[in-house]
Length: 402
Image 1 (tube, rainbow, N blue to C red):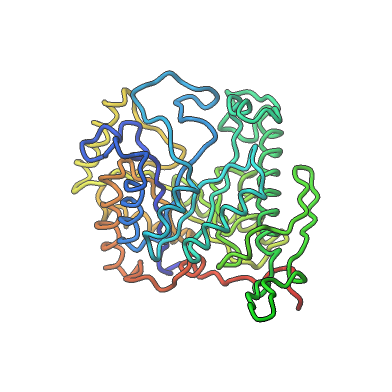
Image 2 (image 1 turned 60 degrees about the horizontal axis):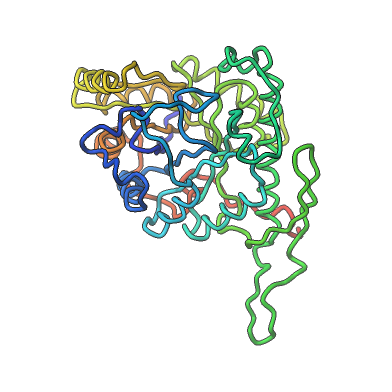
């Protein structure tokens, strides 16, 4: 049975994951586009000793429709750039990891690798990224460089369905290459490439900067990077996966995957499938964290939590649905559930607060103490880097001489 301490992350998005979250009196909707708001959210997560926070992002405004913009004015629309927000918040925090979402579709890995390396420097080793794809047609026009193969929207959530498999393999294959280019660029400066010897006039040892010479179906990148090797060597790479094709991306390209099983039994099957792909690939034997996902609505009682969700649904005009399980109940009941999923092989959880102003403090001030009392969560940070929080070593540059 898995009895290792749990890892916890919070997924931050606007006022919260419920569409009506911004209408709660405590939600501060007038501050959603300010640095102070995001600094406060991350400070709350750090006070709860969470491993990291993720910041949502996309290449287009939020929409209630997957493939097109909507005309709704009763839901939050617009967000700040996730990487820039993380960089702004980093100096105001000390230990918590910062993991912005980065969309691989339409973007260049060279630019992303530089941004994440910079975030790792600004945060002193607490940076990561969540790689994400997009198949939204209306976002193609922002760039004008490509079109995506068509598929049947009726089969959107059946990733193996009609027309979807081809597109999925294309986009997730591109995401894997995107990550590989980033990793090579992070390694392209050896750790001791920067000399800074004023007496001899040598700032850098050019022999310790390396061309990566990546050639693939999606990218051709020579390198080396502009930014010296990040403090962590390799910032944490994460991805969300719901089925086989993205499971393979997690196994091939990431250090941590988020999965969405709806029962401990399904969690056990998912863990076995993803780890099977890992062990069958080129990264066999390397550590891989798998986190379960929950949207959480927490209250002093299960009834109070359910009533609050019903009130939010009424404000939104429809019942809230999600790609991940939606939990309503007390922090103690959530602790019971997380420990049951941990026994199925998950090492941690990324929790999505339905209303950040309510459910994030319920996580940090309710769930965390509950898990601590059960010996299932840390009572203090034990490392200074994000990789350290997760028990991951700092890897050597692949280009360094043996």
